[in-house]
Image (cartoon, rainbow, N blue to C red):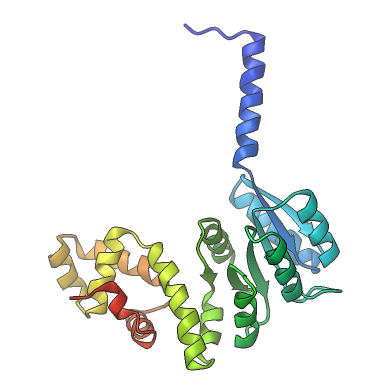
Length: 245
């Protein structure tokens, strides 16, 4: 039987505290709307105990916080006082390019979204997005991928064809990286317009399992139907990248 003395217990306690610090994920919310920022903070800290969330209501507070405690990720509103969010984004990315920045805004104009992405934003989220999508976006960025919400993608679809194709193709590539091996197999068959029953027989899985994979694929790709999925790949010339037979 293992017996620990007081010194051993203190060491374990210190080690446990150290491990918690190592696993902590520092997040900065930069938004001058205090109530919105507080609600987002409450949502994040409730969803994951690793999230250590701080608030900044203007650009000066953003830069001060980054100098003192570099966050892994920042949620940045575009409508900031003194210096707007796009200028803050440009300055932060030029000085601390490793910080993941998720733009969160009511602005859904294509030119604003494209400008943010060009300046180095890792993701763009509409303020009317629900809590699940906010968490999904944050985890996507922390995993090294880009996240564009459905509202953002919709705005980009009505912009110029060349810009749309380039940006949406980037989104597709990152989304494909989030698919499991089995989901990739199902995706290829969906794009070849196989039915659920046919996919079930080809992959030796149940139709219910196929439907589950279909649903996951649609969610990860940011579309609502198989038809929209096929259209997405055709319009961006991404079909060939999957090496379909």
